[in-house]
Length: 380
Image 1 (cartoon, rainbow, N blue to C red):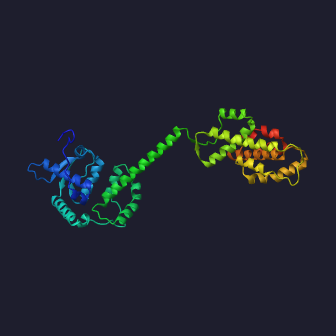
Image 2: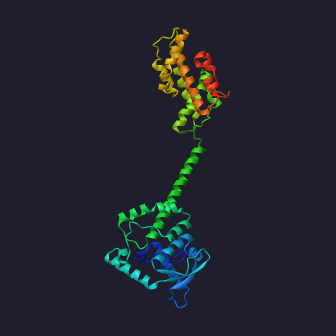
Image 3: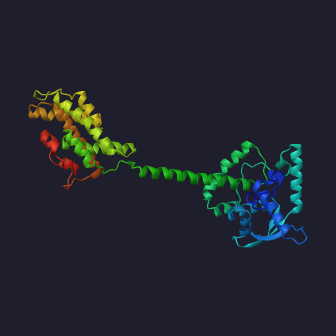
């Protein structure tokens, strides 16, 4: 056979022994047996001396932590004796194979395979108890692999339920639990890494949530100004736009484009409402804003109930003034937008830049529509 295909000596493995005590345990046990025979003068030794470093060199698919785990499992099964569990990879340890017990295991498992009986049942295995708990040595091995002990203990209930439902028998529930926890921990780490990668990818692609102090860039503002949108109308809409999208908590990479579309639609509704009322008239006692006013306010995410509560005060004031105006709907629309924006600023900033509350400045009803549109005191 070509040496380049199989450059190393093959490892012997008894299938019946692996079925009885576990694949890893059987593989390491037979390797230690071959190791002892190779280093024996008479070829019949059942003990030897080695280190975790030498074992990991001969069996490179296991690291030191895995070797400690499997050695402990063999000790628990009564098939191996150690003078001490090595603390470091270079520390030598003495081991003794329980040859008679090993031979009985192999013979019994072979006979069970021929009779189609459950191997573990014929070898004195047990079903998992309802109150089973991992021992201190298992928890120590779990910590040695860098796994959080609290994470391992949280897996106990599910582990017991799984094996109770399967109704299987095992010689070493500790070994099975260690394998179970290791797989779950690796899955957790992989999921966390994938989630972090997705988050980084979103950040790299420009996705971000709406920030409290967000402002449209100059390109977006210039586009709206070229369309004839009033600059004060644009500035008034920013707090409403920010509040709406902060409450939704979504991520976007095109906030400026979304803002331009939002203002275009609001401005079209606003100018349409202004154009429909041309004849000056006094305020009527039973005056109510048209539904289109509430529709325009809804586009700005202003609560309709908030606007309706302002109607009585608005009507009373302008009836007392006894003035004529072309569009009471438009005047009421601006009045509500101003009050809504002012309340939003008070909730977020408390004091205005002049040191007092915003409503301690001039009342909206004492000012003209032009003043309302150009006033920036609430905006800080």
